[in-house]
Length: 432
Ligand SMILES: Cc1cc2nc3c(=O)[nH]c(=O)nc-3n(C[C@H](O)[C@H](O)[C@H](O)COP(=O)(O)OP(=O)(O)OC[C@H]3O[C@@H](n4cnc5c(N)ncnc54)[C@H](O)[C@@H]3O)c2cc1C
Image (cartoon, rainbow, N blue to C red):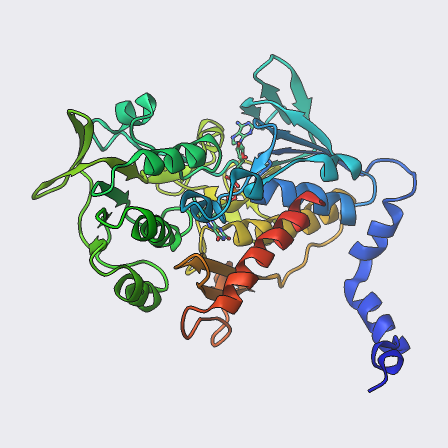
C-alpha cells in the first residue's frame, strides 16, 4: 500500500477522537491561555503517583496552580532498579530530573512536608513554611514496619543490612555489597508477607542477583527466604527461571519468615523459626504500610496500615479534600501496588480534581490497567497484565474477566518492551 494513503488522516476518525476526549481535552487547550486560576493543588511525593498527577493536572486542567513537593532532588525509579543491582545498567539509567514538569508550569519544591492540616487546608514544610491548597494529593509511597523484627531497625540504620526497596542510594549500595562479596559467599534475601510494593519484585531481584553471581562468582549461593507460602506473582514463570537458569545457585524456601536479625563476626544472621542463615550479604525487604506522612495525617484508616479512598476521585475516606494515590492506598481486590497502577490512580485523581474544582460531575465509570515486566535474565523478561473497571454496586475496582494474562514463556522481545515501558512511563509522568 502507498505510504501516503496508509497514513492519510480520516476526518471522521479525527472528529470522533476529539469528541471522545471531551471537555478535559478542551480544557487542556485552554491551559495555554490566560484566565483566572480554577484552584490550587498541592502534591506531596514526586514518584509514580505524584509526578503523574502534576503533569496531568497541567495538561488537562487549564489554569490550575500545581505545586509538587518532593524530598529528593531527582527521581530514581524502583522499576529497572533490580537490573541495576544485577550489574546490567548504571544508576543513570533509572535517574531522571523534574525539569519537564517545571517547563509545564508545575512549581517543584525540593523539601519535606512534615504535617497536614486538613481542616485549615494547608501543609507544613520542614523549613517552617506553609503551603495552602484547595485540594491536596499525597503519594508518599511506603514506609517500613520494623518493630516486629528485633535487630532489623538497628541493622538497617548501620547500613550493614539494606532493603533497597526505595530506589536511590540503597540501590547503589546493594550493588557495591554484591561486588565486594567473595566467590563462594551467601546472598540471602528476606521477603515479607503480602501485601508489599511490587509483588513480583523480590523474585526478579533474586534472578538478577543470581545472573550476576552465575557469571562472576559461580561458587556463590542465593537464598530466597519467603514469608509467604509460595511465589506471589508469575509463579510458574519464576519457578521455571529458577530451575532453567539458576539451578545449584538459587534456592527458594517458602514459609521462611524472618524473625530476628543478628550479627556473627563479619556476617549478618537471619534468624528464622527453625534455623539461622549466616549471610555475607543480607537483603531484607521489611513489611510495609502507607508512608509516614499519610500515617501522621490520620489517613491510614484501613487496618492502621493503608489509606481508604473513594475510587472515583481517590479522595481519602478519612479527610475531605485530601486525595491519596499509589502504594499508600488500601488496594482494590487483585490490584497490585505498582508504579504503573500509581500512574493510573493519578490520572483518575487529576481528572476528578479538575471536575470537582469546576463543580462538574466526575467520571462515574473509570477503567485502569497494569502491566508489570520482570527480568529473569539480563535479556529475558516475563510480564503480567490486568484491567480493572469501577463497579458502582461494590464501589471498588474489579478485574475485567479475561482481560489480562501472563507471558507464555520468558523471551527477549519482552526484554526490549520492558526497557521501553520504563522509558515511556518516566516520560509520561515527568514530561521529559
Ligand atoms: C525493586 C522494585 C521493582 C519494581 N518494579 C516495578 C515495575 O517493574 N513496574 C511497576 O509498575 N512497579 C514496580 N515497582 C513498584 C513501584 O516502584 C511502586 O509501586 C511505585 O513507586 C509507587 O508509586 P508511589 O507514587 O505510591 O510511591 P513512590 O514512587 O515511592 O513515590 C513516593 C515519593 O514521595 C516522596 N515523599 C514521601 N514522603 C514525603 C514527604 N513527607 N515530603 C516530601 N516527599 C515525600 C518520596 O521521596 C518519593 O519520591 C517496583 C518496586 C521495587 C521496590
